[in-house]
Image 1: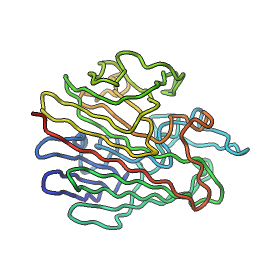
Image 2: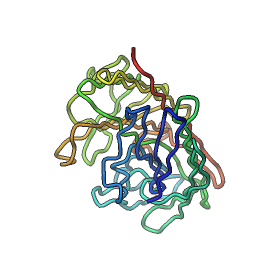
Image 3: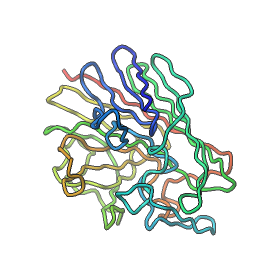
Image 4: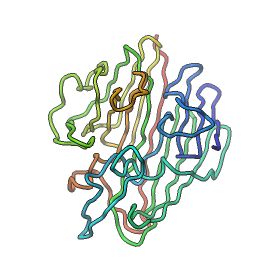
Length: 297
């Protein structure tokens, strides 16, 4: 796999053309995202530090939805899940368009395939280290012949320690039902209410949070390090994931996932409040995300 290194002398990251993923990112010697957890001779986006979700993230219940009178059917895109998960970009090669000391630009084109997905689109990703932050600009353009609902997200894998704390104010929480799907929008349980800095619970977490203002802070007290996560609109919700051994036998309690998203999981079946954007042919949506590491006194 093609790996591109970028740095400003303090922050540094490695980007893989496969999946358009970030393999790792460091502030000095400290990882601010999970270091690549696999064999580097065999690329696996699920072992990476982050990957883009395009043309939308998470799952669509029963792989089908209705949009503007049309029944849309998707097909599973991994062997481990019966659902089409996280779109296409994280699984396939991207083209490197440009590369400088502190920046890389990648492109991904996808054509609709019968029985898989009706989405035809082009995506572009610019990953830059500048001004003390890691900047991630992701856009998607509808390259198809009819309008469809689109959404974007970043699947961040973050180091998890015994004392890791998260500050990520939100107003609502989705409980979980079968097949890892959202169930009901509910008040946020106390142990998942990150309106104040709080340690992550030690149990399985796989839920979306609504009403996010676009700022979050991860605190690692034993590392004397914090990570500020800043998402510009249309980022207004996030997904939180903490694995378990019965889901992943290789899980070592050393990471969790914070996933800024422009839409709700299964938003295709939630109506107008889903956050998905209707893109007509030729229309584009763009997101901006920044990660900034700060040393604690």
